[in-house]
Amino acid sequence: MNNTSLQSAIQYAHDHRDRFRAEFEDLLRIPSISMDAAHQADIEHCADVLVAEMSRIGLENCRVIATRGHPVVYGEWLHAGDNKPTILLYAHYDVQPIARPDLWDSPPFEPTMRDGKLYARGCVDDKCSVWGNLKAFEAMLAANGALPVNVKVFFEAEEELGSPNVQPFVVANKDLLNADTLLLSDGPFVPEQPVIGYTVRGTVMAEVTVHGPPHDLHSGRYGGAVQNPLHVVANIIASLHDTSGRVQIAGFYDDVRPLTDEERALLDEMWQTVGASLEAAAGVEHFWGQAMGSFAERTTALPTLDVNGLWGGHSGDGIQSIIPSSAGFKVTIRIVADQNPHKVGELFKQHVLSFADETVTIAVNLLDVSWPFTMAADGAPIEALQRAFEATLGRRAMLLRHGGALPIGGMFQHELGIPMTMLGFGAGDNSHAPNEYIAVDNWHLAIATAIHFYHHLADTMMNVGNTS
Image 1 (tube, helix red, strand yellow):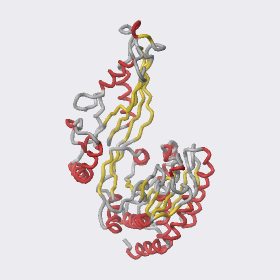
Image 2: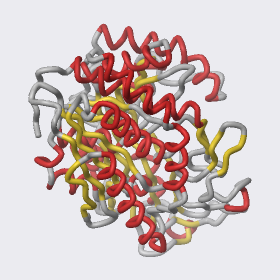
Image 3: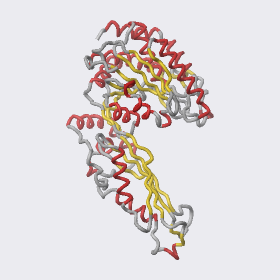
Image 4: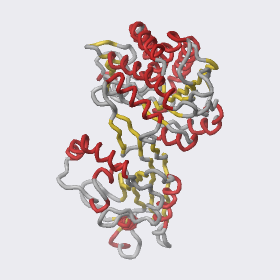
């Protein structure tokens, strides 16, 4: 690694921090709300601003590309050399809507500084990462005339909608997006305790409806003679788990990747730090499912199935003595490495449909799926990021297994099949709430961390070959 070029870029970023912040504030003034069609012009304006800035700092082939929804922004710089890696950068420039403007202490699209914090919608989710990465690129290009790695930039504007058009775009543009590694730049930046989420579960979300008689029936006339859809729902739900908590769907665990000794050690290390607080936050005296494994395993390393809601019949005050015409429930299934959400969804569907007979019909609607993903904890991208954290924060990050989902990450890994890591610039809070803010000094620290990361990546992934 060329320490002179690294320090020159760090110094440039420090010398221009006031301008960086002022430009960031200009970006935050654009209400790029993806959920509201009234802001379509703002989305397009924001995309144009990003393309102009990417071109200004020295990226090439910068352009807005139409999708079936909101446009994506693309740019590249591919002159680091064939022995240097190509990294694909992902972030999103759309923001959450303003549900309650009256709860904001300052206008959400007029950035306001208070006590070292910048308040504005989108400042922490995720325009901080969009602009922060561009400022890291600017610092390296302006100070040294080159980047240490080859770079492809991919910014989308539908993340707050669930990125419905990103997967079709990625599938149709694999050559354009082909790279050696991927940086997901969305999420928190916590200098006091940096973290890297290296594994995330996927999801299958489904809705089940059981249909019986064409209309509600009087239970005094038909009870015992007409099948009750609520009873069928109860039977289906009761069949999903045994008393130990194990899911009773045939084939449900077939593809689960077992933990290695190294992964189990990382999980134990993580749980020593966060386990007690997570368990306390549940607010229950006793936990369930211990026969399946430890609390940490059950919530991060094993698939689960939970009923999220159910309906049918009369649930108001008093009793309405009916056999309801229909009843139903919703579930979320969380899956782990090597499980296919479409396969698991089909297994669930077939299990539920086995309860249908001549007395009831059953409909299973698979609402949404996302892929799990796992990054190599000792892989080159994560090692490069660990070295960057050591350089700027004086400590390595804690490696986390996430029990939740990050659909965009699972999609990228499934479609592109490349290693990845995550570096967010979100040094703040209230990302989907009033008074969203970012600590400005820590945002500048995140930019410095990114500069270190790109330089260290050039070393840890040297000689992988340019995939452009």
